[in-house]
Length: 68
Figure (cartoon, rainbow, N blue to C red):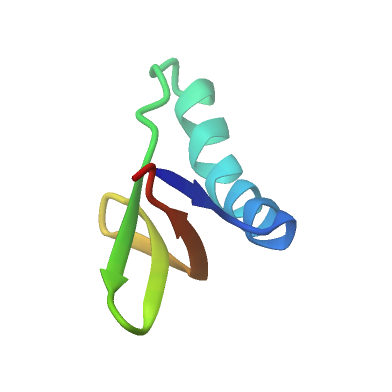
């Protein structure tokens, strides 16, 4: 399975997660990362949400390609 986000979505995600990661580095903590949730709802398509603890970011519609 291949999941594609647009360049704008990637930029949005990186802008959102950067302050979390920077704060963890400043506190001497190994960055904990984030979840990327993909909701697939045929026939409507797929959407992504980034989740970090109690915080979330709606990324929007994404392209999902199945290998077979």
